[in-house]
Amino acid sequence: MGTTEVPLARNQELSPLNELDVAGEARLYRTFRHFWHPVIFGHEVTDRPCRVTLLGQDLVVVRLEGEISVFNDLCAHRGTALSLGAVVNDGTALRCAYHGWQYDRDGMCILAPQRPDLSTHLRARIRKHHSVEQFGLVWVCLEDEPRFPLPDFPQFDDEAYTKVFLECEDWACSAPRRTENYCDLGHFAFVHDGYLGDINRPEVPHHEARRTDRCLRMDVETPEPEGAGKYDALGLTGEIVTISKWHVYMPLTVRLDIVLPDDHVYVLFFHPTPVGPRTTRNFTVGACNYGEPEQTRAEIASFQKIVYDQDKPILESQRPEELPEDLSLEMYLKGVDTFHVTYRSWLVELMRELVPEEEPGVAPAAAGGRP
Image (cartoon, rainbow, N blue to C red; front, side, top):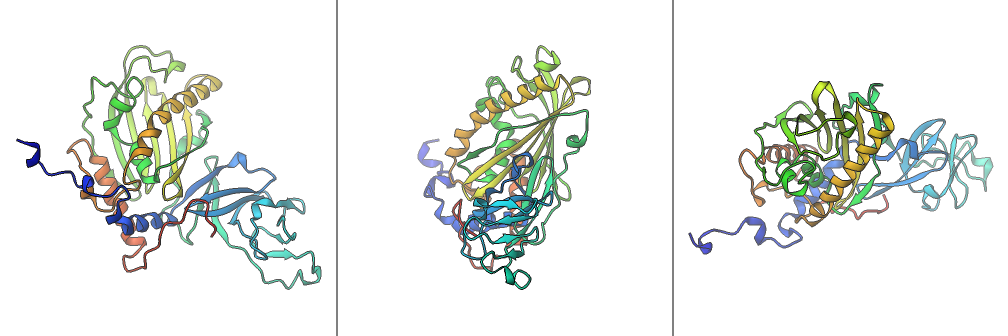
């Protein structure tokens, strides 16, 4: 068969900006406002306000009266970034750096220093967002009612597990692309040859993707490459067969439980937070129930750094940058891309539920934008 008889793949006909699907991309991006996203590690929030960006919106994270509060990073007086301010009054108030206005943990202005006589009469309030500190992370939802509760991570509260917080990095890719990458069985042999796969054994083992009420499950029996350095703390040699259990808490969180010989378990809890439509911050907490704590922390951090560095240029090269709403815009192999088809179909369902098509199109905000 000549090449002229085989039609081009549909994505070959699109512009690099995927102009035919801009509305769908914006709609899917807006959907993520209805879910929890980590924005900073809890240990990074001390006695100073911290500025973060979620879905193009600048926020300030602060501890007031010992609890996490998250507000728009915008003083009600003159629009100054509150993240430039300070925590005052024995940790009970956030003070703006410009004119000294103070806000309590509910976002109410309790003092305008230039007119202290108005303190009990001020009707100025800044928006406070839903936030919770869990699994060593500060989670935020920008809408009033999160669609799903926080994901499950039972190993975090289990004292038998050593935990490690991996360094965050921002990648120039969309968040759902990164979630797909985390669960893509077909790329291990090529992108991670010698670490997660073997280029001479590229076949994908049989697997199924199963939906529950809020989680997509996938269990795979996988032969690990010999000598990758991933399980040195166990003293294991030769090829190791593991059971990898993916739990994808919609729409973005991945918990990967890797079951090793003798009931040893290695866990990666991962969430790609959408800083902007094409900027993603990678949050990862690792856990394992074996080895000496300092050694296992070092091994997890070192190994995942290698794997992430291998993935980054691949993800940043993908076009269109965001997942196309139309599943037919990309090609799929039966038995190989099972997860991708199921995951994308569920994303589209959530989008149609939470962002009705008749709603006027909302262009994605640029990362670092003001609320």
